[in-house]
Length: 586
Image (cartoon, rainbow, N blue to C red; front, side, top):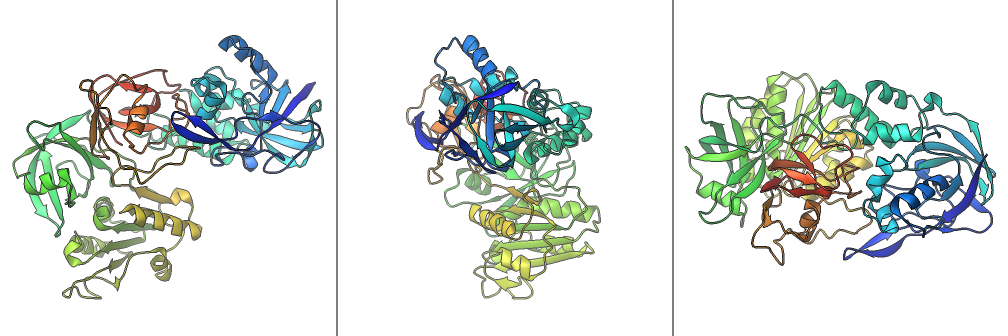
């Protein structure tokens, strides 16, 4: 008979770690006597990161005393106490290799149901003083699991644990954990897991993504962990392309038409993708890397990139003033997953400023296939002088049978004609969409300044638009994901304070920064953090793929080796080091 050995609770507190303060409740302490288990939590317990822990599907975390003994031997430790692994219930019995998702257990007066394996993050490594811990838990098949509270009640140490119902499909915690995190994702097993009603929505979404990945024939990467997994770029690194034409689209935006240097064809980009340009802006300095969305119609004869000249923009000034027709530029293969989907739903294209560039590619694609979908075109600009592609977009929209257009100028010039050149004065907001009758079940594609995108995204959420229907593209570095640590968006990417004189050069393409790698860093993630380049991460040991980043050129080595390798031409920056010069899509 399984037995509850200890009930452990703890509230979030700030823990010093690598010069930062981590808000975490991974330190748990045993409770004496009865404790109330509620739908969302245990009395006296809390979570520092509710996005990754806690809530209805993860109300109670369970870990086994048998795993305690395993880790004591594996790690050579004898200092463990109850709650050592951040768990709420320390139990004797209920091994991960036998407990099934959907199993129901009576403990005390509470009824609980197994919903998912534990999703490990770096904080268990802090608690254990073992940075590899998140990866070790998965690699050794001992993650622990979460319970949902079906009937609230009281529990206490010493209570017997009685299984009252076996989960459908009888898939164990260890099996489900391995199905997501290890390289093998058999379709039959994914379908089997999705037949378990108790499996948490997050894990169901991951398994559906893996099924879709298999249906599309993508063989690299793990779409269940990293949504950017997709088909690999058409060519590695950079390829020289010739500037065939240079066109000024507005007072501030210039387009470069890029063609192959021979009779070969280019890869037909997916509408919405971007390329990285490697620009030799000075004879004696390092090349400058910049990411630019393609604004052209999908095709294999040429690419069009459209660049807004910024007041102090090194790359944009060079493109505007120095790049000439006939020049050769180093160009990466198209990348990115801000792409036009193939669902048969209304499409809303929302842009402001130079954010219109990927939207033009999408609009070209819709017109080329004579789409019968309802298409809504929204764009915001300061005035007509700063409105690129105005006529081109109007012509494309006229070719679509079910198109709608709404243009707003925030500061129109005298010659800008209301009702002809633009439809209203002011800035675009969600209220405009609502007033014009945009259906909330559409797919929304948003690109522009960060304030515009965050406002639109938040506004659409208030209209009950499903998060999966909202797609955004960020110019420059994207927002950070640093669980448990407050990020400082006011700090811009910058060179190292103490820069090494030698070592591989690491270029962050979106941030416009190039620095030397130094031996004091354990990973590319640590280097990015030292430069305040926005990053995304969670486990920091190559398990969760949150840090997966496009590797535009170069190669990396891993320490530790990731559980499941990233997609081709991507890297897990949390556990990788450069082999030589590299360019990252950060």
